[in-house]
Image (tube, rainbow, N blue to C red; front, side, top):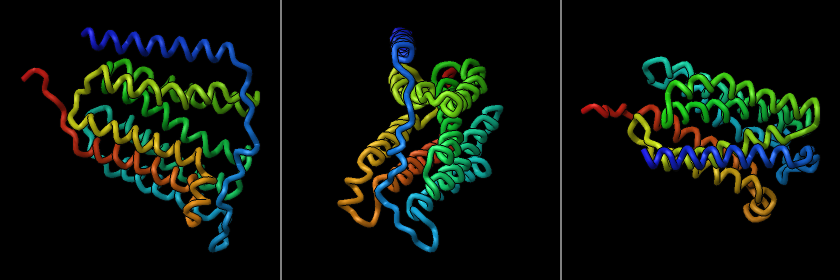
Length: 246
């Protein structure tokens, strides 16, 4: 119980810190240089070929999660919605990278944001409280949608930054201080690791492309992020529920 209380305290402090940073910061404007990816090669009449086709693994693992994931109980619908958003990431991101600009970027970020929020609610449901996690599922999706609408209408990315930042810090705290009702929870660290690696690849897009020549950091970002989702899929497919009463 003391471990859980420490975890709840850290999550509360994190939420307050993020809220304070949000209130004290100025609106964040989309940097138009963001669309200037290093690999612009056209292949098979597809511009930015590798950044486009590297989204296909998202579609594959998303469809696997929707149609092949073996789950019982009411949690099935929540996970299927999550994997559906991952499949849509493939379409939205592929569309964006075919013609990178701030207008097409909306369709890249929208399903990705819904996926972030859905997964965060599912982690809360599994590790902290099942009922609370399910109650938060729809409000989290609404907040993710609003973060995109606020960016589009007011040119302010602060809410979207919260969607990106808060779960990536909160989830490791949850993994450390709370216990799941299922086995194989150590694999969640690999889910987190591959996603963190994806962010590193994204940051060093040009440096990696200049070194490898045949692939850019952004292409590797897509592959690492989709691998993260595949590890999650495999974990959900093979885990067992723990009987704490035995």
